[in-house]
Length: 68
Image (cartoon, rainbow, N blue to C red; front, side):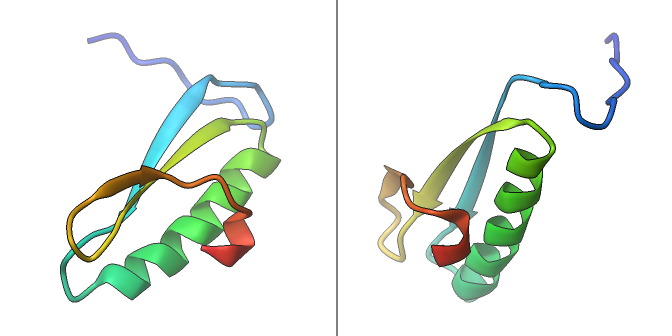
């Protein structure tokens, strides 16, 4: 496998961030994802936030990262 070094500020394509879920860490996952998504976008990444609700259903999150 070939690795490409990350260079801060470069547009690096789309990244999916999956968060939430049915487990006990649901709320912590949401808090962590919000901070991660905001920082990734600030650095120039396109982020596809995928939310899993407590029933296990998947959704694309279209809101602001600060509201996750």
